[in-house]
Length: 122
Length: 469
Image (cartoon, rainbow over all chains, first blue to last red; front, side, top):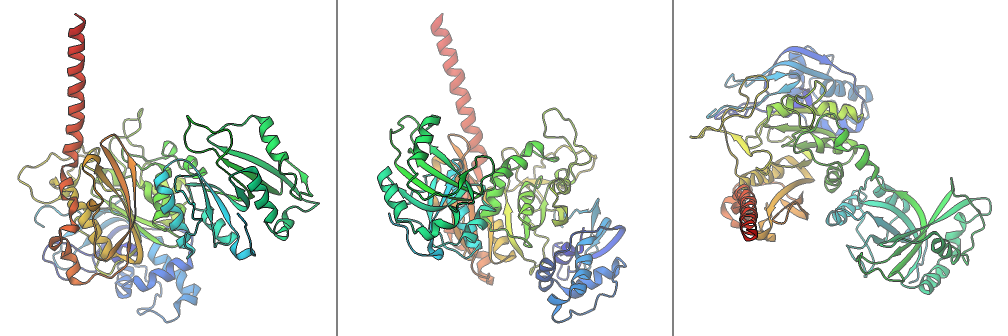
């Protein structure tokens, strides 16, 4: 699971109000090298919950001097965009789980794939 | 039939392949729309014809369309056309010499092709037709192997293979500009793909879907019924980042029984990510997840540029969702021995589409498109059955016949309005928004029809056999 996805996921356990962001408990993390696209990163940044991204990076020990608030004019800062690219797409949780911050329900991540299925009446 | 004026209003001729005929116009319109160009053609435009004239475009527009289209075979700069050889000649003589000159230079090489639709010409006749064009000021030398410029005489002999006329209905002459992407149909064929399933979309249609969806580089595309990821493969080919979800754990993880004839179990390299790796687009792979499309996992403000999907019809794959149900349906065959689908219940087809449209209304960017297949029981189909939503505008509806009584329709919708609180419940208030309701029994109707056919077949056999005795 990549942090771009994590940033958009929320807990859908019935009755939960504050289900975002899901807590990441990773037992295996991988960092891949992927082709960088400045336009894609620039487009994604406004759609992100920045604080949730920083929080997720911290959970994985991958904060690497990312600023805690978004810098202005980031479109032109290639170094910054590359850092965001790395944290959004290159860092991957291979094994672990996502935990609902309110109910404590855990969603397993196996081979990089989160399983978000709930059982009946959850 | 005069073609006049400068570079800006040249005419172009599109030569289209003769399959997926209903899907061609929406595809070309979508690709022109990516360039902010309207579809502008002649008054005699016939959608069924393989030759389309396009006006008001630049050569760059044409090249851009051809770099994406799988319906278009080739594009030409149109120099002349007519319904008789004389008309064609007059038309060509009227075409400005200064527009022709750059391609007819003395030190250049060229060749002329003849293409006839719905007729086969003997070699001698092709040569005669080329010779008949020698009133054109060709100054260069002919080179059949690697010419700098290619010209084409295209003749339309109509669409009836049993009534082929002596003379063509229409003739066109132009300079070849570019070919379309039909080669992708072969190179992306599912036959060669690492990971396939019963419902993998064939390559041609998946590219058509990506084009209808106006997918472009650096988009983020989502498929909520991703299966084996064939739609994501096509979207990634056009540069989009892709993600998907599916309720089926085994398909997402690439485990369980294989779909190929001589193969029992899936190999280790069979999953969606491996498919993207096969085509060199692994860096565009975002994620896939096991998830129930009826219980969205995305936060309210999560948005995608396009949603491209093929929801289950309930025939080869069952329609399922999680939830409590009195009659527990046995979970599907499970490779690793655990139960991954906690109690499946029937996900009624009408609910699938109501949920899908509602999801799209909330999670598409404004101007983003939803593309999906709608299974249809033909004897009962009417246009009003296509689901609607106040925030989405219907762009196109193209039928692909599956059998005499069933078809599926590729529906394209564009988000034109942000949802308000009331819109989410619109389908409850207005019957117009769930006209598909009767189609819950699509599966029943499909199987009942098959049963009826079998019944009559055996009935007939029995009586004809008895008759012989």
